[in-house]
Amino acid sequence: MSLAPKELLRALFQTAVDVAAARHCVPPNLPAPPSGRTVVVGAGKAAAATAKAVEDHWPADRALGGLVITRYDHGVACRAIEVIEAGHPVPDATGVAAAGRMLAAVQGLGENDLVLALISGGGSSLLALPAPGLTLADKQAVTRALLKSGAPISEFNCVRKHLSGVKGGRLALAAVPARVVSLIISDVPGDDPATVASGPTVADPTTRQDAMAILEKRAIAIPPAVRAWLESAGIPMFAARVGAAVAYTQANLRGPAALVLGSEADGLTDAWAGPGVTDVSLPMLGVADSLNVSVTAAVLLYEARRQRGSAPD
Image (cartoon, rainbow, N blue to C red; front, side):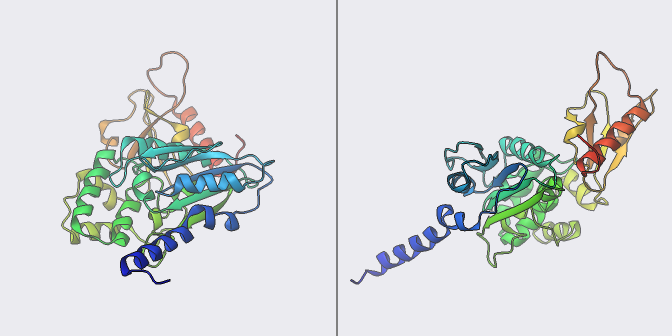
């Protein structure tokens, strides 16, 4: 039977889509369940379908849980894995909150635990957690400008990685010492895993200087906080302040970080507020006017050891 050219092209397209469908490509690539916990995370336009494929083929006697982020109207009902819909291609507040929850979900795991990362195209926008000192508005402005610039996806995602608190391998870093297995459905030329969804579980070969060069080449209006972050040394700073909105356990202390502590009498000056500095709080009973510096330092250093797997929970 012969097909008209239009029908043949449609059939070829549908065949290619079906081959890449999660229900076909996920089951033969699932890892064996670990002796510990299994935490499923993921982001992308195929994240919900991929999560359902995992649930449908995971051993019934082995528990799993977690959350994935997909774009609006792409959700699929799952039993144990939470599916969150967020903004794409411009990130939104839902994506910021969900990415923060995902980062927290993989922290504190042990070496017998498994993080199963389900990554697909679109994940760069959906994993919207900004780098320290940046805001969602900063990321939205840069995203919109890059969309209009005609930059290829490799350049676009290089910039995204360096404005992110979770992309560019940072999700995998937060999961140490757990084993991380990534199932990646590529939508980029060359199928570079560091480029798909900006590589949340893949080491980043690019630099902040690369990201700045791309923005300048594309004549992007760079928000002041973004410029300051890209031109900084690259070590996040966490400042302990009474009443800060971010709990100290949410600070990513698994890699190099600077802890900023003020005097008990005067606290921190305004010079320690701004791009690259994230204020963090410690739980305290009653009303407090200041932090005991030595106790604060001990708590933060212990939390860093805990996140790095060298101290008990």
